[in-house]
Length: 53
Image (cartoon, rainbow, N blue to C red):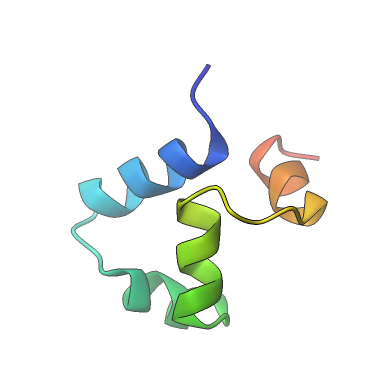
């Protein structure tokens, strides 16, 4: 199974969006989104969201 980081990057690439585009659409900063995409965040809310919980 791919990681959350891999899945969000793949989705962003498929939609031809920048990290800033996604960050703006989700109401977060680009550095915060970068951390999610690189797998650097420890926040469980992101992990739960990716599992549909």
